[in-house]
Image (cartoon, rainbow, N blue to C red; front, side, top):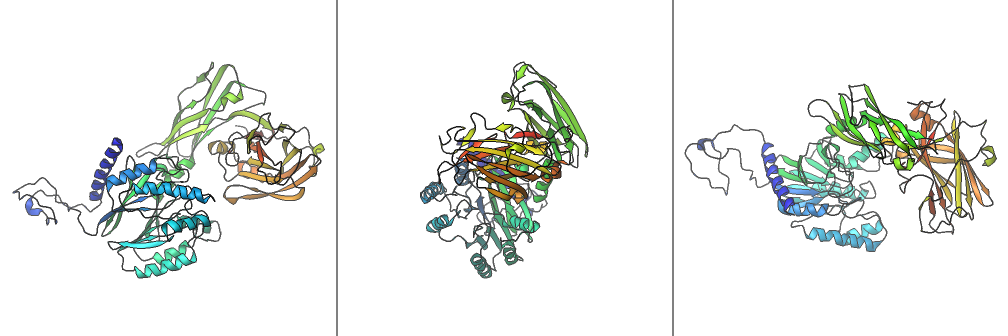
Length: 636
């Protein structure tokens, strides 16, 4: 605790210096004759000649005040961070504290759990030595029951107040989700009319509705937020807007005003630092006659309000996007281990300045390992590429299962002054490879296994099971075998399910990542080009929808055929999902199959995963790699 106090005392000293430096410079003099008027309450000695203080003003304007703003605590909260911030604020002594929501985890229909979470949070607020103003986030008012609980504890979900001539407005962005409702909008119009003489207006809400509204409009989707109507009401008056929700900090300029999207005060975050806009902080606002001065108090220092502007954040994102580091995979036959091989690393610099990469390969087993070189460096000018090959060898063949923790860990940075830097940890894929052969003749979707050669893939003897413990009794209970094939127009999928009893809820879910292998390795999460589609056991012939990130959708043809003790699925998926991203000579895709088996109607299903993790719905980690025939793919 002693260390925390030292940090915040140091921070307030820096904050004072920052506030002083924010004013226009004045000529420095050290004589009494040039001194300005002595402020009320300060008595200076009557010295002749030089004096040991500057002639800058004392910041004692009676309209000046300081407030703090706390942001998202939840959405994957990390215990202790919020209370660390509370203890710091008790040292900093703001006039009061504002919030932008997501104060409890919520997202439940269990009212007793919600009450328990609020009781815990209110215990934190009891430790705060100054007033705290609540703003509702999506975690706080997830459903009607939680709205009711909010009103029981805190009354209205939107409200306003005034302090020293400044008008404070607290809105609810969950009215309902991602929206300012009609009643709230009417209230806001009336409220702003009443406060037209305010010297400044500060607006607080949880979700950055301006950004969401712009995304709706850019995608040609109906904008339900009603944020443009809010901006119209605010237009022409001096105002500043504060929001949270995204767990990424950025400053925006909209509607003739400054908007802030705060990061976290203990919420889920990768905490990669200021350039990423990912840090735990308290925003400190000093209200001056000419408007608010904003800085960010990290728990170990201060970040000025414009340190991560929208422009700077866009530049850093372009750097992350355009300075690409790719690590080619080593894909082995299913029965093969690795005794020697080569890891190829490539730097593709599409950024607007030279880029350098330094790093090492980590995680290889040490049993007789030799590697050359050890320390790795690549550099490329704008628009150029650099590549490096690392030879590895072992005294004995290493099973694939022992190679799954191999990473290239390094730093990517630009040359020159004020370099941009990013740390990277890229998995080195050393895995089995599976074939996606050419289809033999024309494929007719009829659900008949006879049209296929041997189905080469089935559940392992001990599959990963997600669901009720003991609900799967082995292959006699439920099992699946499947395979893929291809032609120029389609990717074909066939699955044969053995099931002792078919009930509603039985189904196969196919996960398919069609992105280039470098993109799949760099970002394993569900996004554009990463599809999932479910095939219920009910007999069916027609079309199913593959859904990708950002609601990208592709239709596939499917036949589901019922048998005495199971069912089969045969589907044709347009090859465009691969060729649009990898070209006609596409290399490979990743896939996994999830078998959902329900033994009794109404029971939660057993979820049997062919390959992958418990995050199979959201991550391609552990999926199988299916390669096109050599004549089709463009191997590096």
